Length: 76
Image (tube, rainbow, N blue to C red; front, side):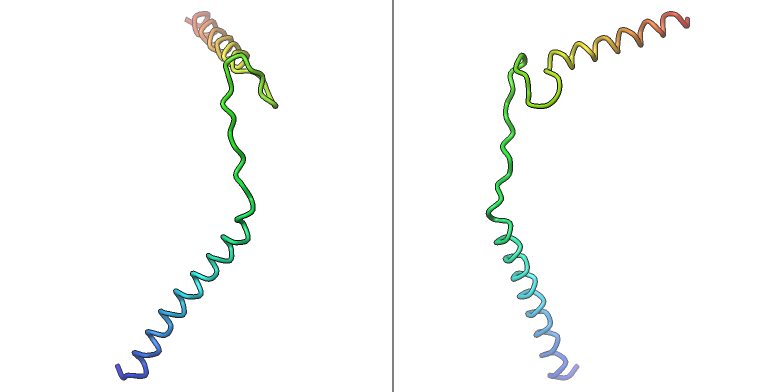
């Protein structure tokens, strides 16, 4: 390798790193104003904004489990 090739190789590496860092910085700056939504900790009996309560989900799950066991018992 001659000196020109070595200089070009080093310049490409430096430019690649500089461009990559500047793109990352620009994306971070563009998205900095957006905050992640906070997840709320719900009590067992508290109704969430959308959907059933945890107690209702638990009751439905137990009903499905009981129905599945009843079907299996009727087969055998």
